[in-house]
Image (cartoon, rainbow, N blue to C red; front, side, top):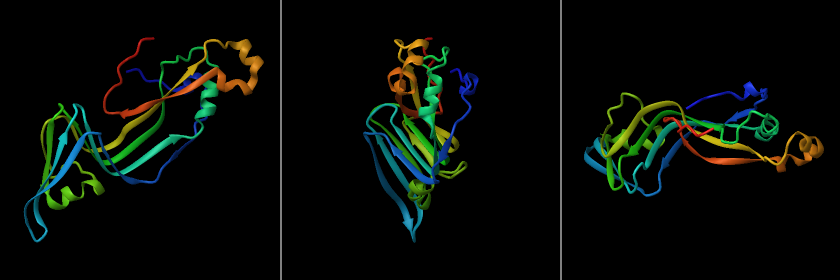
Length: 204
C-alpha cells in the first residue's frame, strides 16, 4: 500500500474535530453472543462469553475509550484537489479515523465458527464498558484467524474518493467558476474498514 499526503499537491488547510471519548462496541451481522457463568461464589469466579459466527471474517470489537476524528472542510479540500491535474480518481482520502484504547478485535476464521472469551467474572462482564487491556487474564479460544488484545491507536478508517468529471478541463472550470463545482467532481464514500491490514493496491 502506497501512502501520500495531500500537502504534496498544495492542499495544507485541513480542519478536524475529535469527538468525546466513549466506549465502543461493534459486532458484525450474524454474530450471536451468550454469557455463561462458571463457578461463581460471592460474585467471584470465572465466566465465558461465547460468540457464534455465522459468516467467515465476522468481526467483534470492544474498546474502553474511542475517539472519532473527522475532517470538517472536506468540500474545500475536494474543490482544491479537483483542479490538480495529477490527482487520480482511484486514490483514497482518509476522511475520518477512529482511535481506540484497550481495544479487543476478533476475526472469525470461517462461517459457523465459535469464539470463547474466558476469564474473571468482572473482566468478562466489563468487556462492553472497559474493553480489554494488554496482559489481561482473559483467554481467547475457538475459531479465530486474527486476534488483537489491548489495541491502542488507529483502528478504523473512513475513506472517500474525489472523482473528477473528465468532461471538464481548465477552460470549462474558468467558464463555470465556483458555481459549477458540484458538476466537476463527486465525493464517493467508501465503507469504513479496519486499519490493521493493508488495502490491496489498485491499478493506476
